Amino acid sequence: MQHELIPTRDGYGKALLKLIEEDKRIIALDADVAKSTRTAWVAAKYPESFIDMGICEQDLVGTSAGLAIGGMIPFCTTYCVFLVGRAWDQIRTTVCYNNLNVKFAGAHAGISVGPDGATHQSLEDVALMRVLPNMRVIVPCDSIETEKAAIAAAKAEGPFFIRFGREAVPVITSEDTPFEIGKANTMRDGDDVVVFANGALVYEALVAAERLEKEGVSVMVVNLHTVKPLDAEAILAAAKKTGAVVTAEEHQIIGGTGSAVAELLAQHCPTPMEMVGVRDVFGESGTGEELMKKHGLSADGIIAAVKKVKK
Amino acid sequence: MNNDELQTMCKTIREDILVMINKAKSGHPGGSLSATELVTALYFGGILNYDAKKPDWDGRDYFILSKGHACPVVYAALARAGFFPLEELGKLRKLGAILQGHPNALHTPGFDCSSGSLGQGLSIANGIALAMKKQGKTNRVYCLMGDGEIQEGQIWEAAMTASQHKLDNICAMLDSNGIQLDGRVSDIMEVEPVKEKWASFGWNVIECDGHDVGRVMDAYASAAATQGKPSIIIARTIKGKGVSFMENDANWHGNAPNDEQLAEALAEVRAKEAY
Picture 1 (tube, chains in turn blue, orange):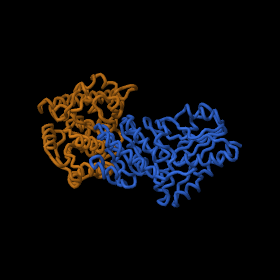
Picture 2: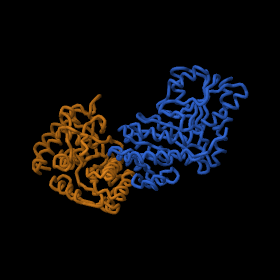
Picture 3: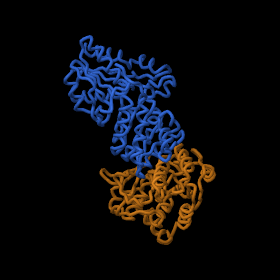
Picture 4: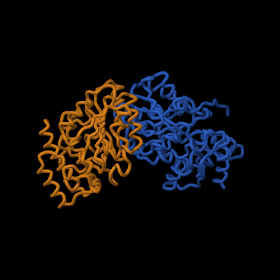
């Protein structure tokens, strides 16, 4: 498969520019990492629609909340690990408890951010955000889907969390690929096993499916871009059809997308299941590729999980 | 209301605070009684623009109660101003009540933001003030903080933000009663000199006796007249003000008076001409 490589954060920057052009209530905020998160694109083109809050994540979230109360639509942006970790209480008690119209963008998420090491590798954020009432959680798979996710979040009322990475990843969707919040997207049909993946792992799942097909295993790949609200109907249907489930995410397996799927299946359709994700350890320095490989967040890791679940 | 009428209203509000906390059998009387003049002047002295029948009127000024545990004083003011019936005060902290133990904006008419986790209100107030400026609106934003509360680091992040963006549509109020849950602020984590701290963060600082309604009214007027920088009123107050056995006693930060104590407290509040 040949695909163009583009960082997902570019899709976020493009979405912000499009949104602000249409609606001056949209405002981007950042905490001193604007060049990395692409909010700098807003600062350059629409300086009135951008605020750099400095290195103050708690104040960043509180100010965003106030802007929402005052009728604006803030996109509260910074590195995922600091946004979710440092300001979780502000996100919980001020934004979610009030059901405020704040959109959170967690950039540089996951282990693939690489050389900066464990302090900067957000691997707990999906768990921390999906546990919050009123919050919706989206993990897009490429730059085009990130752009669609940000636009969809802006048009819906209430708090959203969109998580994306730093590295350039293959663009596997197109402008025409359907995107609807809360609707899982079947990327490839199959009969023997279903892989629910999101973020960069969707591409890895597609690669794994191609290779497995040559070995006679028919793999369904579902892009579970929305972790909350979960598309229960699609998940249950795929689990019933295939009878074997693998989840794959660039996140701790505790509390993440796999956990969300397991919570659903355990209650409504217990199914043999394997989870690909980071296994309760911190990351470390290395290239993104090396780290993804080391932790099994790869086509190889998914193939091993498929073989295990089919045994 | 003129200053005499405000003083009478302060007495009524203090009675409401004591009665509702007694009925609820829990709550925070100390920091509600210390903030009574600040809140009463705000709602009844013509400082805050509001429409009790239309709480979300877009011409309203905003009030963020950052020290959320002092909600009884605001609940009393909102009820007396007509946002909801006085009977609601008797249901404070009960299952299904519109008056939660700490403010919930989705349940209580007149609140623009929930609070209860300390240190967050000033950032929220800044955000509203920025939104007003960005939209060319002249609505003002008020934010009440406790002096123990400003031990939270986020307050100082927000102090920088207000000054960086020259938010002269913000008026913060510091209920400087010197006592926090565990004891004296000065014994636990000194916040003084607060005047110098806020001034050095670029704020217009107005200090006053927080129990003299005339002085409190003057302070609000002075804040409203200040341009180019945010203002803070440092109100020197007494925790538990008006009830001698509660005054300056950290044990009354978060304890409810029993029926006997309530009778004694109410008699004392009613007997006073002014505070």
